[in-house]
Amino acid sequence: MIKETAVERPADARSADETLDALFDGRLKLWQSRLGYRVSIDPLLLAYFVSVQRGQKIVDLGTGSGVICLALAHLYPSVSLTGIELQSSLAERAAYNVRLNGLEGRVKIISGDVRGRQDSPKPASFDVAVCNPPYRRPSSGRISVNDEKRIARHELNGDLVAFLRAGALLLRNKGRMALVYWADRSADLIVAMRQAGIEPKRLRLVHSFAEAEASLILLEGMKGGKAGLAVLPPLVIYRGGKDYTDEVAAIVRGAPR
Image 1: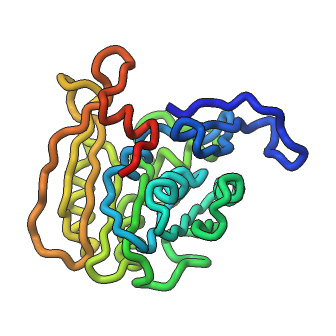
Image 2: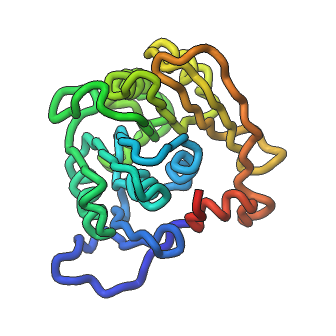
């Protein structure tokens, strides 16, 4: 899905603790930590799910290495994007990845806290918010000793409610917010989204295989929207073994929207 690229490191390249990886059949590249947080397919599914219109301003809450910003900038050449990331190492890496792909004019990375403690954009200044938040509660599962993995996976520095409140604050009225989350926490997500003043409008469940239970939920809501939720057909990742379905294979290739 995201392949390591065998290239000679230029003099100003990243450290030996990182890999240069290819996205969308090599049309995008990004540096990632070898041992820390690494991109999965989840943010790509979110980039293809969210509703985006020409010329909109998009904010990515918890941007990590910047993969959602990179993907959306590639898929929608007319949009502008801002990524906010708490971990300074990831924010710095995301900014480097933006420059690596020549997207400085359209993508801005902010090292800050989505809870509004520093350097937050102005309220009601975005049309769309996206978020791939930590899935695990602080006390659930094994907590990694690696800082990047620990904060990316567990709600240690901002829970689901904090991300949704940040989205509600930054969105204009009728703006949309889309998230990818664990399917077994779907009820938490739907309830928290509505409590944040963002009405759930589109829902799609993601299954590893057609016969398997859903593993992820993609949910999009509208700030100040009216009630009414469209439940879309399920998205199946694998046809059999590790062969992607046609739809997911197109996502991995970076096919046009």
